Length: 436
Image (cartoon, rainbow, N blue to C red):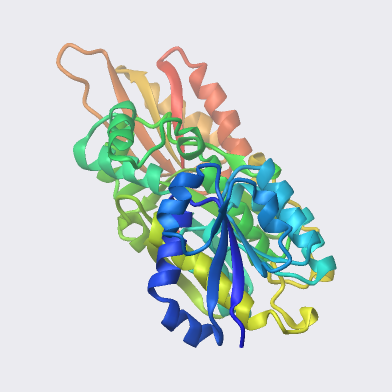
């Protein structure tokens, strides 16, 4: 049987990893796929570097349109990134009847509905395992392995940069800005780390997982996104004293009112496995009604971990290329005509617990005032720390953990607490998930 011919758009870190792993394991991959898979054409603006990386094993061009328009190419791998030219090339490849593999979470999270519709009409596959959690096969697990389940919730550490920063802040007691510079020096953070530290990258990935888990269209614009830039070392330390660790979590839940879709710093009990995921590693917890809780852990980025997911998609497409399109696994797990219109809940309507830190005057009656305001908003306290003021100081920190309440209740209560003359500055609020 003749080999499947693949065109590669972009041979940066992941592209080079994909080329090398496919070449190194070509015999094993062919045995699994049923036929050989060959990258025969590479498009990259730096043609000299691309030619060096491929060693003359395939044609190198600077114009990606030559790849997507080549009649001999069966599958196009898009590793350019971004929303602009990548979207244009993917849609052009689909229009030309080519299958597509992409690691572009931003593209799928923002334009996935349009792309999947175009693919369905042309009878081709768009595969995107590498778009979420690098080498962890979480898309396949959600879409196929857990297909018998009603997914209740997903909670994931799905950005390695922020997890590395939070791990370093906890281990070394350093502030965010100091650790960010170190992360950039070590190559864990980009020169412009905005997408990572502001939670945008994690929200792209969570949006995709929520769509597959609950059978809804991708709706990145409705996700709540909060990064880690406002976290202080003292909050990580106080959380530890209360038996929790702070992680940037992507959380999506199905509730009777709608679906929660949110990314933010979160206190997690230190006893949970996911709380002990350190460094640049990723982990995703999934709770299904039949299977219970499952945990998926591994490298969420890097050349070869991500290449592993890209090549797994190549193998899947090779196996399914001749199958009737109606018998293939749907892009978002549910049949396109059976997608739900379940609403995404606004943040004010979500229900969770909270960590509150307030800097207050060290005088009688302050705690009574605070607890009265919380009680008036039907918010009960689960645990509390009151720090002794330093010598000669007239102010101190009070830390509280609440039981579950709606976000709008806590926001209203904090406005009243911050208005107290005995409370200095703003109250720090961090959400808390027990994950049980």
